[in-house]
Image (cartoon, rainbow, N blue to C red; front, side, top):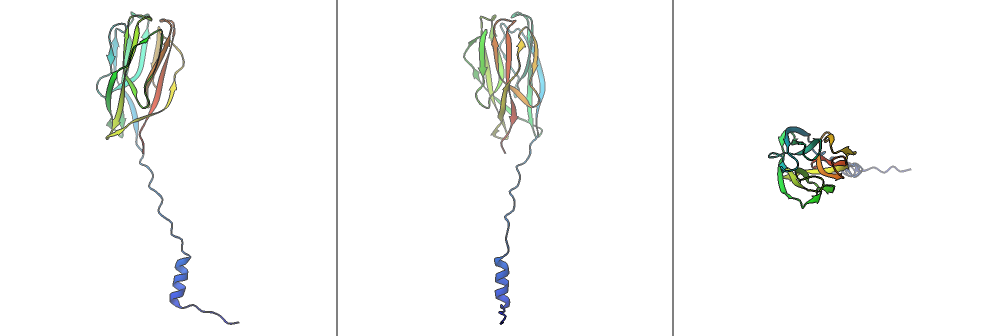
Length: 189
């Protein structure tokens, strides 16, 4: 049997043809650290005083004890992304809803930054929303959810870790039920 031999050049070409070159794996998206940090609380006369969080803060809590003449405490937080404060861009006040059957959800990727209530449960409630940005990109709010029921006249609610308020629902008078909507702060890769 005759043995076929390859020239050195042909052998090199054959070897190259069998080498598989793998493209480098894509770099993984940079991980950012997000922290929602409570920084402000204010007690207001709910039945008459509109409330908006201070500059670059959004609502992350509310407490109320008593009827419509009792004060309400609002809690506001900064959003820190990689240690830098995100910017909050306030929107306009929403249209009014009767408090005794109010149900408000902010538009997608908007947080609540203010609330305005007039009178008792027959009065009206409005909300003020805001968008959030960091390094020129919009901060996103994901995994929206709603809290359990709280008795309006005797409760304190605080958003969980890295979440912000995105709405509120209330039915009845001061003994009625209040629920809070919230979502997790995120940024896209």
